[in-house]
Image (cartoon, rainbow, N blue to C red; front, side, top):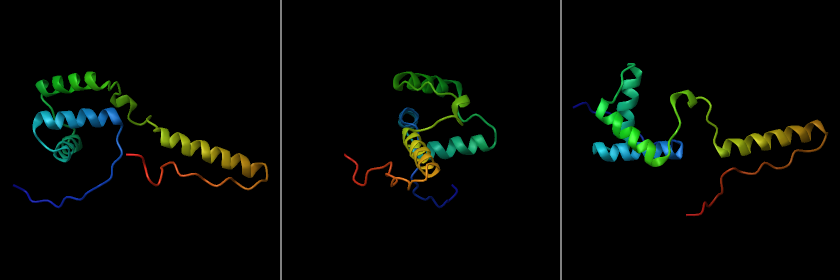
Amino acid sequence: MITVERVQTGVRLERRLLKVLKGLAEYLDISLGDLLEGVVLHAFEQRCPFDDSTVAVIDRLKEVYGLDLTAAHSHQLRSSDDEEEHDQERSASAQRHRGGAPAPRASSRPLHPER
């Protein structure tokens, strides 16, 4: 065994992708963190982390959770939060060009999200 130092992190992921990852971790009986570490370490060595039977499970989970994204989409994804911020930046820029003061920027996240 190799001892490592792990840190807690707040990572935002696409909702359906996260569901597939959690389902796969459950199927493999490992934690989500262990799964992600394994996938990343394999990717760093340009190796596939999954055998054919696991890929079949992934395909089924993708179908169940409606995940239709592919690697080709990886650098094209924008969240709705990003879109709201982009709209606010455009509005503030237009306001400045008209000579007015920019409107106060609203937070894209509520202080107390509904649970």
